[in-house]
Image (cartoon, rainbow, N blue to C red; front, side, top):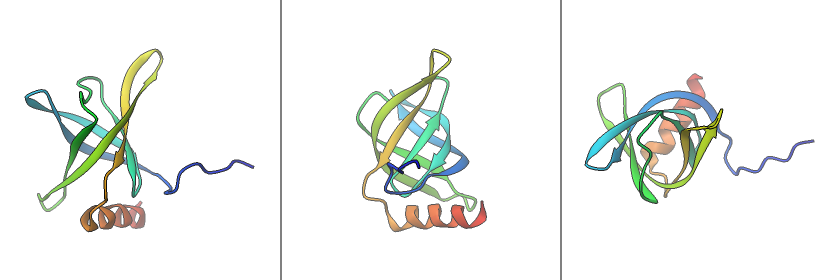
Length: 105
């Protein structure tokens, strides 16, 4: 029997996200998400600091701003292709977003 290490179950996702990179903005895809974290796939432009904000544009064109801690880079086939983040003090809007996503997935 496998023991779950995470306090919050992650759900598969395909959500476009934006995050700061140097003096511009970079893009990625959140491929899994939970109340306390997410994994973001990107081919380039990894965050350079431990704290950043992830931005999700919602269907009503509102922007959900999510403060996160950068946890680690991930690689597959020998290339870095994504990174994991931990959500800092999830807002009610973020929590609702994750719950609604779980409902419709």
